[in-house]
Length: 389
Ligand SMILES: *Cc1c(COP(=O)(O)O)cnc(C)c1O
Image 1 (cartoon, rainbow, N blue to C red):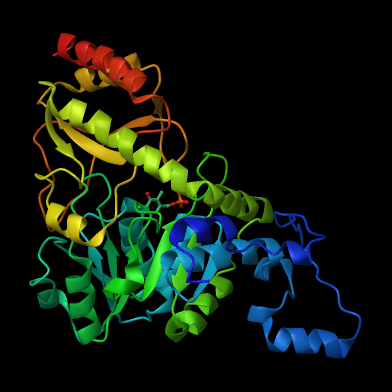
Image 2 (cartoon, helix red, strand yellow; image 1 turned 120 degrees about the vertical axis):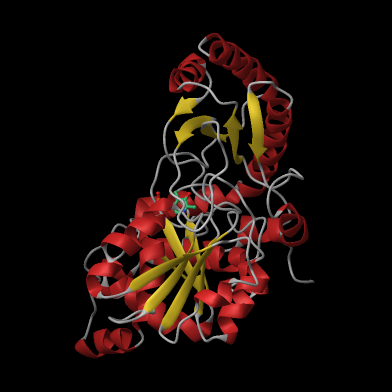
């Protein structure tokens, strides 16, 4: 048989019924102690601890099954599952730095990454510079002899600019800088980071892998070259993915293809409708021609997920609150990637670029509801917005 395609692999990867009495899904192994019959057997397992089960914190057959499926979806060699997307980011960045080093972070990166830099890395003598994600030729001007890692995210959190990953990763590689990419928006389903020179791909599996808003989970995927140092970083920090959550992550992946395709079409329909409304100044969605980096998205990605933003017409903050408080089908809350629609007023910190504006920013996650119902709900919300202006 020829190499199975992505949707086939999403259904079968990590599935080993022959190891589990024929049961289709892996059991949830809840474990701390793993016991051995002899000292020799324990020593043998410990000598190759990455490929054996030696202690609950270091993984179980449940987390291994999830890791196998994620590694294949991202297109890397190996994945380590951790407790959250942020733990994945921290494990990856900390793997490459020592006191006195320097890292680069895209100016539109997930804000807890900036927080990690400013409040944690800084205390250990690691300095961070922020670069304009849309300036792929200028990024090398930020490189220093002690630059060890660069963090990429495409599209950027809240503002959705799509950087040229290949160009930025290529420049960093030429300078001997490790390339870490947060690939959460695409879920690994719409973008293959290792084809573009990324060294380490991070997922907040909390989002589309789990897909049902009921677990926290992260994943770090590497090639063989970086496996040792990145896995050691995650393990030395004590990171671990809880077995129930790893199970939910793998279960979510089984239906990821149908969910992603539905998120995509629903979000495009809602975003196009929003773009036609007078209350909306700009839609921030990579599939829209006016989105910075739209051409990069079109060239490098195979689709778009349910998450995008809008810049509202200039309005008092009460108008945004009226919009959000009127919505009945949209939950107000952080995270995204579940089956349900969400709305969030956003504020962004930008130090190397200018945030879109001047009106307020609102982020939408479009779920699996009927988009006509979402549009009707948004119509009422926008009426309330106008009334409060
Ligand atoms: C949510 C998110 C994370 C962090 O994931 P958690 O599982 O919540 O820690 C990281 N990166 C991006 C882009 C995210 O949206």
